[in-house]
Length: 107
Image 1 (cartoon, helix red, strand yellow):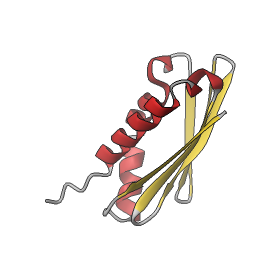
Image 2: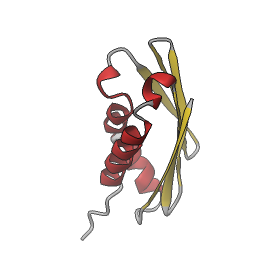
Image 3: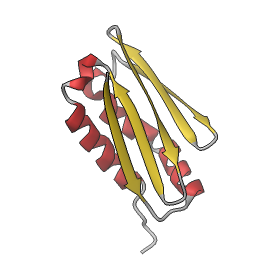
Image 4: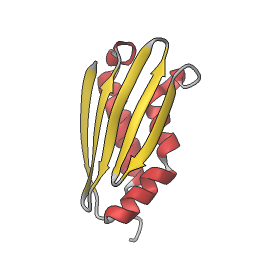
């Protein structure tokens, strides 16, 4: 398993950040599994302010979570060997997509 840790700061408050992550989760999912989406199932469920992730496909398992705080979001993932080779690229894509979701559009 290849660990990935991403911190994204925001100014939305906890409730709005959680709402946006919930509404935009399919975009984050796409960045995680990329072209393997058809063969790789990724489930998610909220447990308080933590979005728990578990996935499997092609004999591989992915797990992790997204913690939502008032001023930041922390993403922790354990990538399986199949995705580990692309861990840096996946982390960059997940971070960029999450930043877009958490962008303050009030200005």
